[in-house]
Amino acid sequence: MSQKTIRLTMAQALLKFLANQFTECDGQEQPFFAGCFGIFGHGIVSGIGQALQQDPQIRYYQTRNEQAMVHAAAAYAKVKNRLQTFICTTSIGPGATNTITAAAGATINRLPVLLLPGDIFARRNVAPVLQQLESEHSQDFSVSDCFKPVSRYWDRINRPDQILTALPEALRVLTSPSQTGTVTLSLPEDVQTEAYDYPVEFFNKRIWSIPRNRPDSKLLNQAIQWIKAAKKPLIVAGGGVIYSQATDTLARFVEQTGIPVGETMAGKGSLNYDNPLNLGAIGATGTLAANQIALEADLVIGIGTRYSDFTTASKTAFQNPNVRFVNINVFDFDSYKHNALALTGDARVTLDELSALLSDYSSPSDFQQKARQLHEKWETEVDRIYAIRHQPLLSQGEIIGAVNELSDPGSIMVCAAGSLPGDLHKLWRSRHPKNYHMEYGNSCMGYEIAGGLGTKMAAPDREVYVMLSDGSYLMLSSEIVTSIQEGYKLTIVLMDNHGYKSIGALSRSLGQKGFGTRYAYPQKDQLPDDDAGDKVDFVEVDFAANARSLGAHVISCSTYDELTAALSQAKTIDRTTVICVPNDRYESVPGYDSWWDVPVAEVSQMDSVQTARREWEKMRAKEKFYFPR
Image 1 (cartoon, one colour):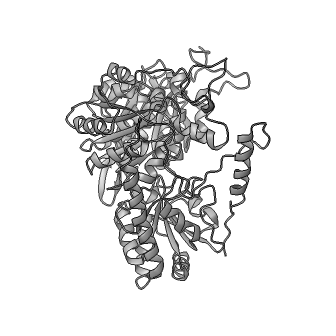
Image 2: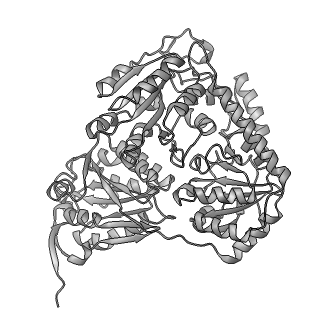
Image 3: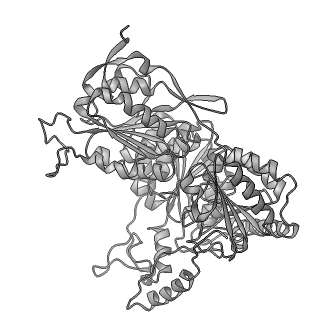
């Protein structure tokens, strides 16, 4: 009997297949693709574009910037715990390469995004086509090859029948808890329009079940021995806790064992801020509580963390000479880091099994008491910073406090780059697992507004607050227009620092006086550094007028009372609202015994650089390698 087929173009068949892909986790089923972002250039207009128009099984969303749409897709996937995402399609050439930065971010953050960039003609006879990058070494070469290092799976579809094998592989990677990231299928523009007789069964509904893998039982028992032997154990909670929906499980585990918790950037919200054993942020942007406990910890239980240099304070956070690591992670690449005892498995089921085997265990009472006291001490410090009334410009810490205290407890705060992430990591009081949405794997300037859009699309019933500064706003504010067009309201708190606040502070710490970080006109053909003080001619940007021109409702304020009034007023506005507030670029939140390794010039004629180099050498000597004992 011959196989039943249906004749479709490759683009039509591709979208028909994608519309029938579903994920299932813990009995909850959902379509994997929530829609398709795209800008129709010549590389996709007659292929993917025609298919979306003819048979809109997948909703199309118009965006303004290709990088922004991938940020929005990644943010959506983050809120949905990687169980849903978006397709992002672009033309060939610059439309495609505009997405590479955000594609790297999705892969770094282990978030699924499907990219469908158009590509040059497979049949080659009309080459070079518009926007084609030619190579004298090979005709099988285009800008789409640039996606290979930032994609977890990459393929080029040179024949319409190749999607029969490429698409199942793409979905296998996208839905894998351990392998997920950006998947790129490069689509030559002629092949998109070619027809083929596809087997009807290819388009049957497919449910990708997300497994909860268990760790090896022998290693689990060894971990139990290590935990019971520990006198000062510490949990480092990463994003994997939230993605595996293990936050309640972690809370029960902490209550049972009395082991305190420090949270990574991605893991903040693993415990509510008011849990007495939640020490808050850990590492280079950590709290005094978490960093003090980390220094003396003899056992670190990493859960769903990849141990970035910020989490480990560039390998200086854990100074106990006998420290050991037990890592719980779905990805064995991460579970083996720091030469750890690797419990490769799902965070939730692994914590459940540890709890059962540790039924009679509790960490030493004096250690628990110290952790609780440090928690209270830290909450007092947060109260102090929230209550600062800095003059003449507001401090960043009190602005964070105002947003945190006046936003609805069920809201979501979105941020990504600059000095804000470090201060938010310390100061934001997370009230639910998604309350704190930070893109810090790539810390990409420009993520914030696009990420806020994706967040609001994933959680339309929640208020979404986007916090960013002038540097990120100037890089990518275009999706304000998309939020207006689609009716997704954002509250954007825009801080005007007259330049790059984070880089300025970093430059000063390196003895370089903030060179090149202020928005100021050159003086004698040189950009002024901080030695010039306020006697500089600033480049003035009217952010309020800019945001208003994009369709946003705008509120300008300068005092704390005006800011709180603006936040209250924003709740009554039915469209995206931008609150513009100036901020003191020199008023910073303290570092709390943390460090980040940024090498200082070994030779310099600047005394300030020489001083910074000597300080760097002292801290560099504290960096450790961790080997099993």
